[in-house]
Length: 254
Image 1 (cartoon, rainbow, N blue to C red):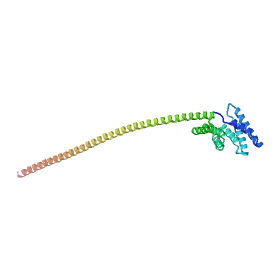
Image 2 (image 1 turned 90 degrees about the vertical axis):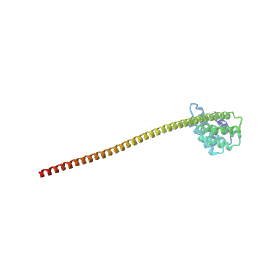
Image 3 (image 1 turned 120 degrees about the vertical axis):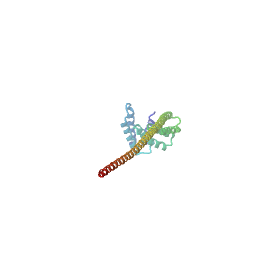
């Protein structure tokens, strides 16, 4: 991915001789910091890019409408990975300029910022708009294809994740069905147990009632037997008494 059109914009800035001395001083200093940062290849020298940003902002305070210096500021923000700010900066440049080449450059850098922010749909739209303004821009074509490839990869991954979620849902449904079946089986077992227990309790109650009935009958029979014995005993006593009375009368007559 190309770094942006910084070199072209800087050449345009250096080619201008109508700016005040202080403004050119800020731009020259900002360009120096930017180039020094590019020379560091083993790491990203954000400190130098930040210094370049500060100098560009100083120049823009003097002349806010200078699109070329605004472009340099956007590049410095981009290099510091301040993508939200660089996106807005390049969008503003693209909206303001009527030059198709400059618009295409701004849209290209906006697309890069969007791409690094993982905003793939928006980056694709920016690259397409850049190509509408400059159909010969090979690098915009390359980055557009790259962004579209990344988008397809992301969509495929999401599709797989969705399929996996659906499979898990189906598995969970099957598990729930099995749980329901097991639950129904357990409920049936409990119902059967309750029925068995109820039958046993009923049988036990019937047995107790029958035993109670038999015991009552036995008691009545025993009571009747006792009464019969009592009657017999009383009859025997009466007979004995009667015999004694007769025997006493006989003795007197003698």
